[in-house]
Figure 1 (tube, rainbow, N blue to C red):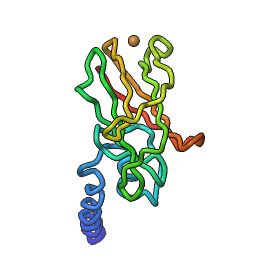
Figure 2: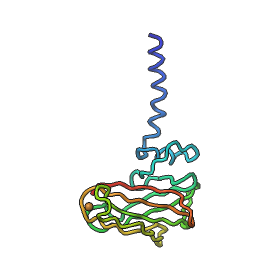
Figure 3: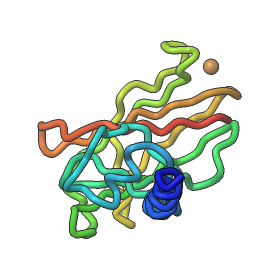
Figure 4: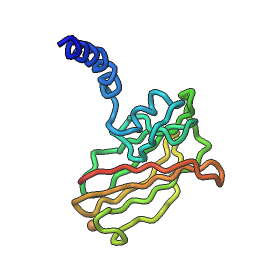
Length: 156
Ligand SMILES: [Cu+2]
């Protein structure tokens, strides 16, 4: 009897702590890293929702947005990069490859450099020519050193 009460009390104390992590962040390990870059457990490479911070390594994070809601047709993928002090970073090199995971090879764009635009966003056009599952693989490099990859998954 006493033990079960202790368990209930312990659960009540732990639950709010767990809920904090999931309150306003996307699912996956990436969301935890966004809050605490010093203790990365397993680094998910799948990015969460648009606008959310996604840590590439312990020093840099990126966030993405689309110029318009992705549907059939051309869209522009825009990515901003920041250092761990939340300062915008423009000296990294980003590249992107867009493809349909269920149709690999059919219309992969290939790994293409993203262009830094005047609003300090790395930009690349993506042509969604078919309904279905899409994925964009983003590579982040500092000079010639790869820092990490990130993946945007979506359904058109
Ligand atoms: Cu296709």
